[in-house]
Image (cartoon, helix red, strand yellow):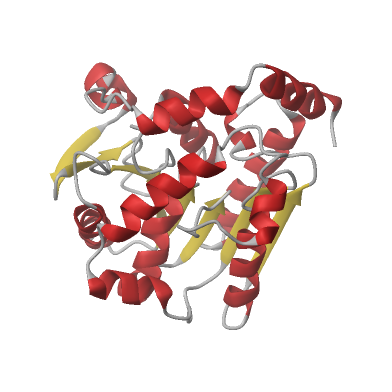
Length: 282
């Protein structure tokens, strides 16, 4: 573990950073849209099922597509750091990067968000290229649904600090909540309940079914995350039918990869980029 990570984690705790994050999740500015403010970030955009697909790169010689679903508790809009993360992971010109800017919880229902995800994957897959899913935090909910709904369209997946337990009531999670410097437990429980209650019975059923074959998966997680037990349980389940790589960074906190100067972040980005390359034989 690096001194930079320890120092940053201490600073975030002193600033009560998770209180700021909690406010962003509970009272998000959903009128803000990054691509409307900075259209130069993308090469093309397509309207899809209440959201947009945004191509950061569109190389006709590409051998794979990375489709990204952002975190933010399903309520907060996409931000510039998340776009920078995708750009850094997908620097290889043989990869086209597409950001799925989905409708947000509060303005849209949970049902509509998952419907957008299936439409987005279908749309991107029409290229005929292998589709590699990339998601951080709450974006993993959309990925898990796609694993159950359209597994044949998923070539591989990278998950960063995935949030895949809407209740968060297990003692293992609660015991780690005090270490967490980014997520507030009660806030995530409140939003998790809102998300779950907005799903159709069929969607709830799919999200609760055991996972089957979904292709190779890489999971990036910090050792100081309250979601760590949930993520390790996910890895155990996935390993029954899939090749899974778990990269745990002991001093890391939730979504630490959005702090780009950390040595751990640089290493994680290299690992994610290498994993993606491995999926199409480069």
